[in-house]
Figure 1: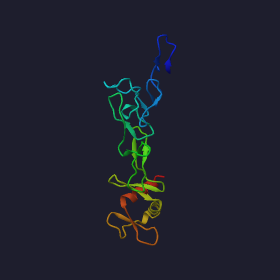
Figure 2: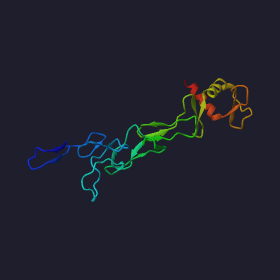
Figure 3: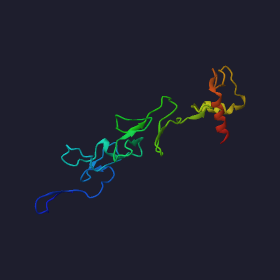
Figure 4: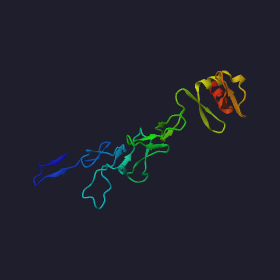
Length: 193
């Protein structure tokens, strides 16, 4: 690349023939793509005010988004677009990358699933087990509660808990009230093992 001075009547700029390697842009493919892109177009869409073809290194020049990041290309039918964070993800001000949003429930954690399709999930953290309700809801229960449900499966009762709940005793103290459908989910899950 650079200037070719072997040409008899002056110098001319040498351009790279063909597309750039992934992650690079510009006439000589020596300009990195914008950090939000996995791959970008070689040249920016020209404007009447542009004196030369500019490298495609802006956020709007992406043609592919990073696989390991919860982002998707905004342009469906255009040649290029921006890499936007998917639902339940946001761009970090620290590293400029999309990350799944941590849930409010401290028993759950944010996880990125590369898919396809890409999505953010919120599975139970290590040390907890997910129990499912008849109403398509789910809750993460700590292992001591899960063990107590499983070991006392035959004697579970409402005790002092509201209707539709089982009293789970973990020691000396007031019972922990757990929805019956969640407890039945735990018993069914452990029964299948």
